[in-house]
Length: 360
Image 1 (tube, rainbow, N blue to C red):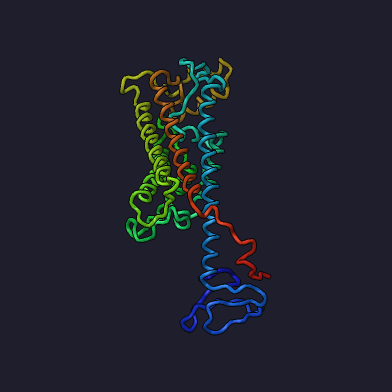
Image 2: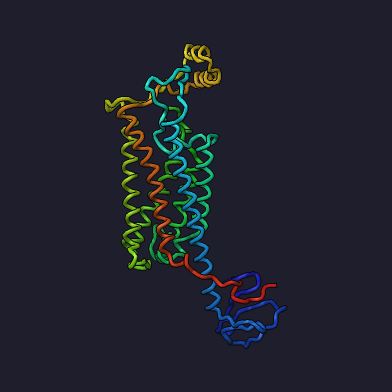
């Protein structure tokens, strides 16, 4: 076991030995279980291992908390921006340069739709906060180092332990969500639909990964150590249930909103491919930039927004949007609950490395 560039534990003659650089004055016998660097405290291999364990646990808790806060800020920022642009933003015009006939600004059907353009403020912020959150959660490996997540490595899927799956899949899913953006279904080509599928896989790994592994940890593991006095199991299960409920609202509402016309509901977004007449109208209404985008859409046969949703379809669209937002928020609150209850976050570390080990 390599402890540091200056310190390691090895086996010699059937007993544990700690090796230190020759430059230090060492008092040790061939079969002692500790060493003494002149004038300093003796350390046994067990003490060094315990010190490293507590240091890693503290670091893991800090990284988990940092990642959860980044994710929470990212989801809340994007969700609020979307609602603000719909309710208080400047009135939007269609590709003809006319105000929307519905009287409403466009409301995205999902958070993924909201952030699909990486050049917008919400797209930039979601990418930055999501990547920061994913990297912190990934490198924390909290399921290995926090005792209220540790399950042992005997159980798993296809030879891969639940510890590894829980540590890797959700943060990798968040990276896929942030890096592989979706394209609105009405405007997507075949390959863009493939990219949207990758994005959806990432969202599934992120949210369902948390639900599955947290449920397995709280209800089926006999190894995990929970704080029963403060009701840790109940609090964490509450966030799992809230995540599932809001995911159900998100999926159901989005499905209804996207199929509003088939279900006979009023009134869905109207998308059309611009014509030359539409381009002329945009130019006459003094919207040259919109006219240029309409030209590009006409050439590529890409539909553009003519009118926005209202009434029943708008209500389901908003429910789906906020369902996805709250799914992410409740999931991240579940990570914060893990951090709050883990005893590792309260570890009081030594004020010097290995408590007076002389690094020079």
